[in-house]
Length: 69
Image (cartoon, rainbow, N blue to C red; front, side, top):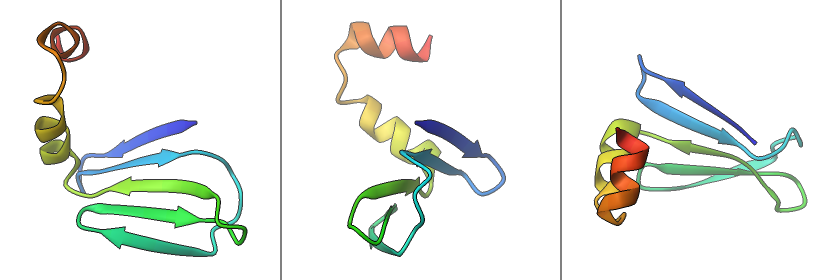
């Protein structure tokens, strides 16, 4: 797995494998790219800074401190 962040576009990309991408499906700020066999290849998170702020609120305080310290 490879994680990249592009600050100029505020996009985080999580690459699960190097398989070819056939199609993508978008739900809000999330875009999941799939291989021809329907396997998840790449997840794009648009507006990543907002997404991480929102999702971090769901973490227990001890974990949130450890991750964002």
